[in-house]
Length: 478
Ligand SMILES: *Cc1c(COP(=O)(O)O)cnc(C)c1O
Image 1 (tube, rainbow, N blue to C red):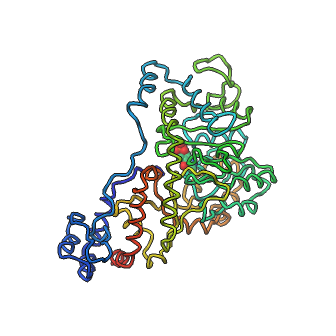
Image 2: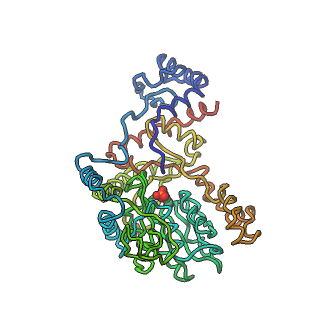
Image 3: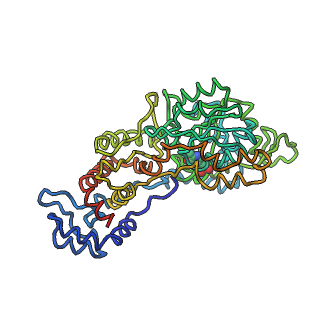
């Protein structure tokens, strides 16, 4: 989820523009329509009329020229408290100590404590946290890594960067997570790791995934890039696998702009990750020491001091924000779950806290008189409720063929293994296709930082669209 929340006005205008003539005709046949509104529907001056609430009839949807439920701003993201947050960052900038030093170490120890792991290493971003883990677990050419297709591209990009072969396991549409019941069928002698993603900030079923990994002697690398402070049985994600990976990119629940972290209890592994992130120099080598000698083939992934200062400021809010998101998500879920055609996310029974990087639900158009998801999204956006359709299926995009055509892949795999059509067939994920292409709807985490009244706006808007689904569908189709 990296898009800033768009102002909804443009979406609304576009839809109105493309449907204005038909809409005007439709509205003229609407017994609830005033003459003033009929004029508005055919012009640009949409939404400037008082809400049509008279007569006990349904409110006019904003997409058809009525007033939006909401014009008030949603909470901003990222949050920056000028008075409270700036001094440590400015102090660092003035000190000239910008490369990795005490602030980075402090951030790492706090993040390790927060996730309940022995060690944390900060890196430049979540993508490279994943790549580092794969490479330092010696996973590469010829190895298979089990991944969900319902994730951000970086998960699979990391597997490809390591030279390994992604193997996709279908999504459980109820939870939006990798379906643990379908993992074992995809394990082969070449499988080395399972890479579950706590996607949308909802924990994956780590108990079952852990059991499968143990039985087959596989590593588990958790992609917790959207799941800061999420918990299973009061234990934090990022502490279940051999390693956990986090992102502090601007949209994430802890925002630094860019940044990432690896968490683990395996000290020797973490020493190697440290070394790798610092040109391969031995663990403990300080920045600037060029005589230490180089132990392993490394790269350079260090976080800066001013990034750590920003992270330490954000860290102070994370727990309270996570609570707010959980409270609002539970409330919103309880209010929309009975709208026909709306099926909110399900959390696994052992989840004690989610991160709600996004608030997801499934949309079934049958509950909305056949109104297509894209038109539902437009209509909801027009009501002042930003919403998104979310991910496209990652198991069938051109980047895979591109990786398979690379020199390295052609040296590491046989032509048969790199046959993209056979790969696509092996990696079919039909439930995920439906989730991506027809069903999923998201709200961004920052909306969940609002008040209960803000959640009520969402409920009102969804109810309004439900009540007017037939008219909206007709306008969208004509
Ligand atoms: C954001 C994200 C990443 C990558 O993190 P970056 O810091 O953007 O590199 C990986 N996986 C998931 C699920 C993410 O959401």
